[in-house]
Amino acid sequence: MTRRNTLVASMSMVLAFGAAALMAAAPADDTTGTGGQAKDYRAGQDHPSAGKKKDGDKGDKARAKDAKGGATIGQKAPEFQFTDVTGKSHSLSEFAGKTVVMEWINPGCPICKGKVESGAVAKMMTQVKEADPTAVFIFVNSTNPDMGGSADSSAKYLKDNKIEGIAFWEADGAVGHLYGAATTPHLFVIDKTGTLAYSGAIDDERADKKGVNFVVNAVKALKEGKTPSPATSKPYGCDVKYSKSKA
Image (cartoon, rainbow, N blue to C red; front, side):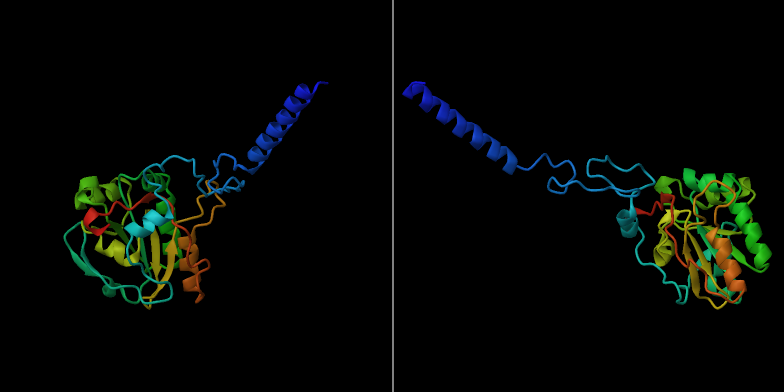
């Protein structure tokens, strides 16, 4: 090999080595959002490449922002007054000495409608009444008027689905924010002393008959003088369509 050929070969080796070193040092395309390191995204976690969530599934942070305030388990349930869909005035305190089950509803929410139309709500009410015949049901609609919220739509929704209970609609979402209602449905159980005993989902969302109804279990526990377990669960459904002035 001539001296010229030897020099060319040596320079080629240096360039090749340098290119390989640069490639090794450079980070891979960061599709995981973790600096090129793989991340395990389990159920319920959002991959950074995921698109926007569908309406009704805004996520916990967005719901927390919408639902300002929030009542605390084990403490006195916040007092409030309201006018029901029939025009009668009420206050929470008038139900003192009785177990109160509150459910946030929205006739336009497919998940809320699904729970009613499947018979899950009626079954829950029947089982609650069997455990505690004096229990009171209050259905709250905090849907803003621009999204179809009204006293008439609330009344029709319950009547069409043969659900009997006290119901009211609030345009400003004041009670919803007071309790921290985040989804439709979102349920709360207040014991006979006026203490908030349960907050969360109606059930564990399983479709089979072995699914656990958290509300029924909470009422049964209270009837037996026990503390509901769980006392809280993650509510699921459409986000409450609060008025923007309160969001």
